[in-house]
Image 1 (tube, rainbow, N blue to C red):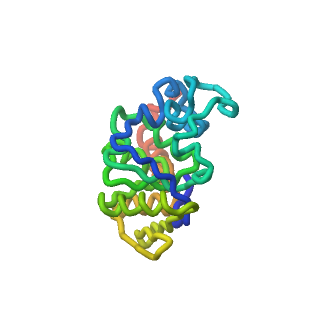
Image 2 (cartoon, rainbow, N blue to C red; image 1 turned 90 degrees about the vertical axis):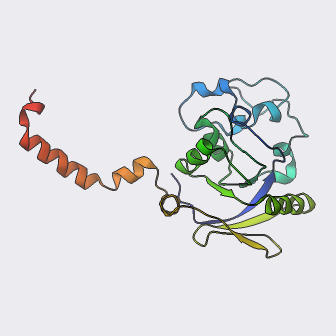
Length: 213
């Protein structure tokens, strides 16, 4: 998992509430568990005019040019701005996989579905909860300003707009530590590799019959 400290990222405004995980990555793409390659299928049913299937080459698929992700001004965005209850619906880690694989590292919304919120942290994404008033302000400024970027500083726990307006956000110390150091659950476990090996050696010495061939 990549470490996250600070970005000055282009914002893509998805002005919809209650975006569920099936909209983020439709069910037919759940056949794969590779954790990569899902970016082209993010918001597949909104992004394209045809029906998507796993393994399709999306290069020449007909696009819905009214959908925000297809607009040239938002290409390369790293910050996804959304409305209430983002990530609701069924629990699927493919949703944060697709968002991260598409190039996003930060999401800002008034609220997130609980399981999606947790899965995002576990996969290196930073979901930021901001008040509805702040989110409204960000939407208005983003839509009025091409190339609108936000400075997101995890260490300081702040988000700063181009005009200098800044607001803070909450994050638990454990989640902050994991993101700053690029540690997922496997990475956290491997930090104790020496202790694990020592325990296994003691266990084998104390009960050798368990390891007899």
